[in-house]
View 1 (cartoon, rainbow, N blue to C red):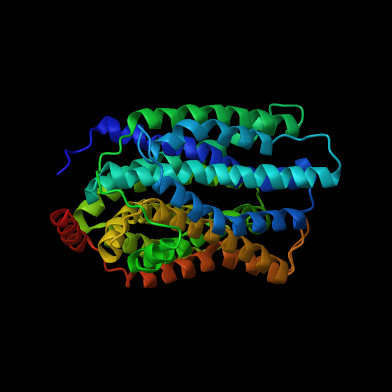
View 2: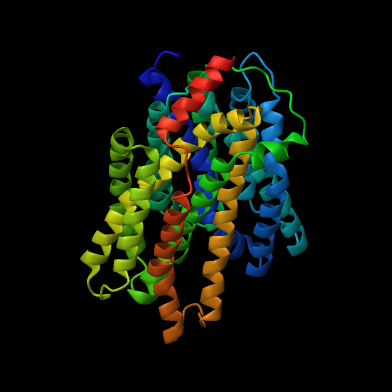
Length: 442
């Protein structure tokens, strides 16, 4: 039995997610806008670029999982990637927000090269970073605490900073080109420093027999792990909740509530609710378990998102209040899904006889990206089909489409997520039985 992790170890490892998400959230929040309104690419070309990148992820993510699983170094299997890939990852972030003096075709090629390479380097850092969680501890509650800290740094710190302060920083410069480039430099340097700090503070403590599985065994590792598939499906649906909501939030405030500035105010209220969710989740997981906490969060999100649809537009306080409760529930889901993932690794080892940290994390990462792509595409598709036209008085169908996307669709996604979780069987008691059996057979 491993000794409990020190608080400094948990904090030092978890802060790496701030480094990861300064990069990730910068791309997620601003790159599409930068490409169309600053870089000068056509929206259709940007859509195709994002789609091509996600298709490549289907190849790149499991390949990176295989490579990291077979890495051997004096720093372990996963930690070296934080040390050696942090700089190229953030150099590519800065390159994505640089505007070269090329022709349109040259700019499009430049965007393809830098964005896809940035995505590959993000996988090369993010996947091994997440995999460290599975080899730091096998204590289910410690994994919940780690996930809570990670969500605090990822959502509260990184997302909060970029959502609230990113655009004002850009506005300090005479052009958006210079502003976004300077913001990318600030975040890139900070991200690198934080990833290096996480490298020094993390430790791969779980010692398991070295698996020399081949590429052909990836199929066995994935399809032999039923619980991973169920959890990944729940995560994909849960991703749809926040991606669709965030995608249409600005449209909702601009065209439905007729005040685009409310978006910034909205996030200022939601960030403290994320903090509450992060703080409360470990207590809930200790009391009722991770699986039931995920279910509880899904119920809260479904009820309060659905209820918000029926609130009159002028009742801003009630709209915000319902959103705040829903946000707390959303954090229950976000924390527990990542805390449950490491447990599926031991389950897969027990079920197939092959242990792999990299492949399950790669699959989970790909499913999250797929959820983001599908949800974002669905939102824009609905808006197009209902007759949305930018900067005009919307037709009733377009207004109703935005209302549904902001309220009803996230509620439906959360209900589907809840339904999928009923098929998940790896509770804490079952996990302990599997872990005991694995340890006794070594």
